[in-house]
Each structure stands twice: as C-alpha cells, then as structure tokens.
Length: 282
Ligand code: AMP
Image (cartoon, rainbow, N blue to C red; front, top):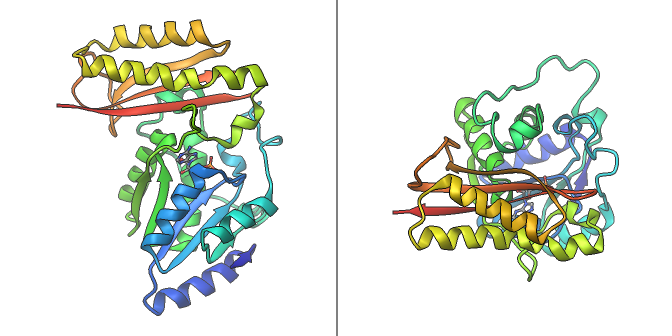
C-alpha cells in the first residue's frame, strides 16, 4: 500500500496502471474510518484491480460555525483499516495541495440542494461537487463508491457525473449500522453518553414509519408528524428536518408512491446526526 500526498505522483502511477488495462475503484472519504467506510472499501476491493482511498477533510463543504477544526482525525488507525481491506493507494493531500491560492474555478450545484442538508447547510454540496470534480480528474476511476447514509450526496454526485460527462460508474452502498441501529458515523464520537443511548431512536422512528407505509399509510404529513413526535418523546435532540421525498429526484410528495426517501437530521449538543430509509411503494 502506498500513501501519496502529491497529486502528480498519484496521477502518474494511476495513468500507468490504467494504460495497462487495470480497473480502478475509488472510495472518497474524510477519514476517521469506521465500518461504514469499510463496506465501501470491501465492495471496491471485490470489483476492481486497484483500490484508491482518499482521505481529505474538505474545508469547502463545511459552513461557518461547523466542525471543520474539530472534525475527528486518526491517520494511523485509517492506515490500518486500509491495509486490512487491501487498499492499494491512500491519497492524503494537504489543503494547500488540493486548493492552491490561485484557484479560480469552483462547481455550483443547482438541483437537489434546496432541500434536506442542502437547505440547512448552504454551500455544502458546492463544496462536495468541487472536491469530487478534482478527485475524479485526479484518480480517473472506473467505479466510485458512495454510502446511502448520505443519500442526497449520492443524488448530487450522480447529477455531477451525468452533467460533466465523467465516464465513472457511481455505486451506492447500503447504510452500515451499529447493533442498536444507529447509523455509523465519524461524528458519533461527539455524542454525550446519554445522547448515545437515545440516538438509536432515530432509526427506530424511521423503521416505524416504514412499517406504517407497509400497512397502507400514504399520507406524508401524518408520517412526518409521527416521526417528529417519536423523536421528541424519546430523545433530547432538536429536529433539524424530517422530510419525505421521491428518490433520487428529491421532489415533494403529498401522496406516497414509487421510490421514496424518509430522511431526518437531528441536532444533539455537539453532533448533528442524519439518517434515512428508502422505501419502494408498489
Ligand atoms: P465521510 O468520510 O463521512 O465523508 O464518508 C465517506 C463515505 O462513506 C461517504 O460516501 C459516506 O456516505 C460513506 N459512509 C459514511 N457512513 C456510512 C455508513 N454508516 N454506511 C455506509 N456508508 C457510509
């Protein structure tokens, strides 16, 4: 496994491998790897000749007052995880390497950003799209792996790849959860112990909504109110949003049909947690 910090070095290695017919799989992350990331790495390893993992806490996707400075980092642990999964390259650039002072172009996302995390984190998806445009050009992978934990990100990235004609297959990977149902996240370490005990109720509220849909409920507002009531009763978190949209279009729905997503964001004292379920309604 090679750890590379310079764009040029990674590009020259990967271009050579590609010209020898090797299939490149790419897993972009912000590090502090957990089993959610590991699921992405395992799929990449199974379906490609070369696996590239990037670890970059991207300042452009953090808003003012967000946790850029305190975002958890542990490169030693990340290296061990990467080795365990047979990663060939860790790309671990500095901010200066990715964003030199003379940069003049960034990417702006127009669709799917006025809802969910796009609404509560203005500019977030522009930062995501800008860094991914750079990373896709640097790595030029055949396949790139993204977690459904960030389902809106998957929708935005699919739009980016389509609109900018990247010849890359975007592969969504199911959410990996703790045994008690909490979606694995680097930010879970911010939770106070009592908040950690309450946090599985987020997924429980989503499961109960999915069960109601299975029993025939089709009214989105009623479901949203029930989820809110459940979260407010069982946790000390403050609801940021509870939304039900068509997926992946993220369009408003009054009556539920087709593929839908129920997505929530809840603020605890030091962590804002997101979770979602997607449901196919026949
Ligand atoms: P991050 O390091 O948080 O930017 O995440 C890097 C990638 O890992 C993104 O595509 C995430 O959606 C994915 N990911 C993070 N947590 C999970 C999880 N619990 N299950 C599946 N994928 C995840």
